[in-house]
Image (cartoon, rainbow, N blue to C red):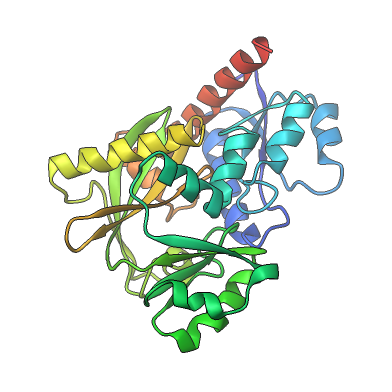
Length: 310
């Protein structure tokens, strides 16, 4: 990798900009510690032209949210023939739009909560009758739990929907399942040890993820071996169903009766000091710089192989 000219893209225009900047700085520091030629860049203006001018050979995408995670950036880099980390445009777009991925998971017979989708232009508020409370209301296209609410009564439903529509023109309404919050990271197409998230708040929201020092994590999670294998198998299946590459993170709820529910797949998981994929990799014996290098090397190989077959 020492001959590669690497740029870490972080920041960007989405509501997850601050988280992205933290991820990008962590990745930059990790790659620099391995003696690699790396630069940190906020993709503003004609940054593609800048990447070409500097003869950048591979981009490490540390952008979260719209533009960076929804396939838009991946498409621009494909057109410019610049290699990049993670999944391609199609898988990125499917994973980022939760309504689309939920339908694919359902078709693949993966266990998802009961849900329905509502577009802002069609929303009347009467749709609250479609599901029994409590429910989870979330933007179809957003991350870091922005705009997500747990709604326990019809009186709060419209307010929660309006909040979710601030971040997306389409919302996803799911049956709320009380249980343990678990995640399974995928690295180089293989599952990592499972992380359990124990938040003090009602769910693992933005505050719990990035600000609440009381949020606890356990990795590997204390699960029966058969259940752990089941979760890892579902995570790999979901990763493949969307066409994801190199890395992802699947989020689950384990109900009180032992039922497993897949919530979503993240194609660019957080890479901050509190992020879950690095915790899982560490439990598998891969330190943070090693994780970043693995993502970079595996992605570069896949991009070059894909382009050679065009």
